[in-house]
Image (tube, rainbow, N blue to C red):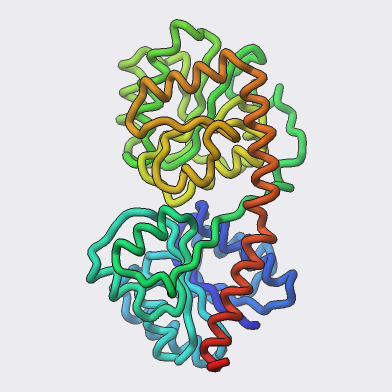
Length: 365
């Protein structure tokens, strides 16, 4: 098969990384791939380094009609078997329309669980033969918006478990952040935006810091709440407990050097940060919100509590500080679960089966 992928996001975050995982795995299975993405985007350089064929098309968003026209012309020239749109910024609306103009079947991936008006959802997803949800939580949102079950397919995001097999120099990693070996270090990774729930984590830590002086927190990520969260940490007296590390491209290589991942998201498509932490053998504590309940098996690979409950979040953290054996067991079970249920191979095979089903339907066979 020849699959043309459309990813218009500017930054190389969780979604674009999944696209790279998928294209590499499809290539290993003998399929041809083309990636359409904006020039100078995060995925552009990563794809080129991986020797993936790239076609740069600038996209300014859902209303960039010239992007849709250029994409349609490119599709007519290339004639792929399937178009797979991966992102919402222009790729789903205009990508679906462009595929329709070129008379090529198209599918789209949905990675977020925020709801939209039924009319908007109907128009957005009408051009697509299949809508791929990365979690059951997202599939439920789509069903509620009127997307038919016959067009819905759940294929969870994957994690490269092998990438977390190497043993980093944890003494050096901890020293970089001013952490001692006796510290119990909690990592949090995600954009500094309201739905990631960092404010509840800070409150939970503030309530625990006197009882557990060994607690330290490193928050990875950037976002417009940066200054507000720093101010909250300062007002709670967390200056020596919490540090903001910004966005780190090398986090995957060092995440296993921490003791716990806190993922207090209030809304989440699935939670790639939680998947990566589990792959690295870390237990996860977070809120039972959205797709997080699929990324973290409560009581098996981590502990989940009611959303927005900082007291319950603190209690879960304290439980793992007090019981190292429980923490280690949850972490080991998490890694095993990632290998079994969230592998790149499983994700890729499910996509191949979906593409083949779409093409079979197209041929009427």
